[in-house]
Length: 113
Length: 110
Image (cartoon, rainbow over all chains, first blue to last red; front, side):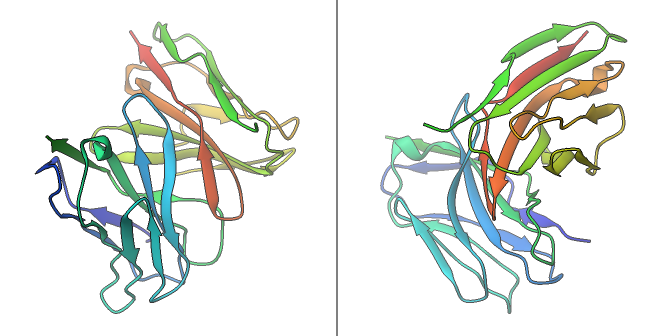
């Protein structure tokens, strides 16, 4: 069925390090792909999205490219900040253009000065 | 500004009691969702609605119900609370493919 798999955390980095959080999805239908971020004590916020193959979503220095050939949507940032410490969720819609979201288990990022 | 609010933010209840969590959005979105968040599981969909009088079961709907009598509200009811329902609950609304989340309700069943 439709699912999303994320790398387990926590990911611990020093400030200004390069970040990659891996996300893969099952190749069913034509999903849209998302990254959501959850800061401590808050709900989820949309970080970026991509709706079709080869699209690149970007926001706040974060990027992810929709790779159909590898069924991946890895999140990257060139230089993380302490304020990026949060839990990051990869998500997809089911195969055929519906509004439900299917989430991965989340990856906690901790950035130290 | 439009928003989505959940209440209460924290609740402790006893096993067997009926509990209702409120969700109210002012975006006039047709789509509303309830998720629960548990360590190791991410967010799992409980129930969702695509409009007034429409409700649908998600992947973990057992023991929960919802009703949609107007566009703004989707209350979530735990019919008889169980310890396995201790969790953080998130409500969301959407139009199109972007969802907006409330701040969550932390429910503890003792």
